[in-house]
Length: 70
Image 1 (cartoon, one colour):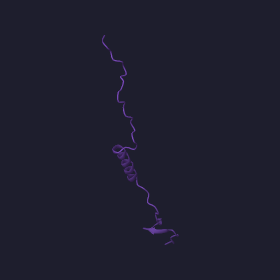
Image 2: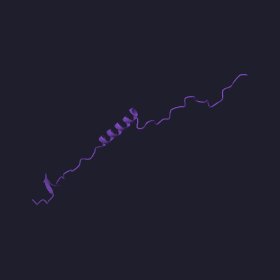
Image 3: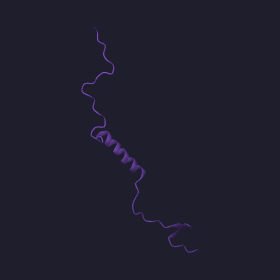
Image 4: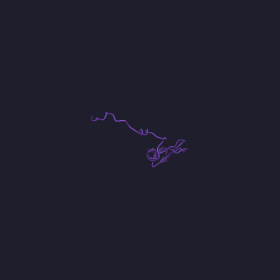
C-alpha cells in the first residue's frame, strides 16, 4: 500500500480529503424562507408604518355632478 499524503485519509481503498472544521454554520434555505414568511406575516398583522393607505376625506365629492330637478 502507498502512503497517504498529509490532509487525506484512506476509506475502503480510496483516498479522501480530511473534513475541514466549520467555524460558522450557514443558514439553510428553510430558515431563510421562514424568516421571510415571518416578516411578511408581521407586516400583515401589525403593519410596517403608521399608515400605508391614506384615510378617505370626511365629505367626499361625487365625480359626476348630481342632476337636480327644477
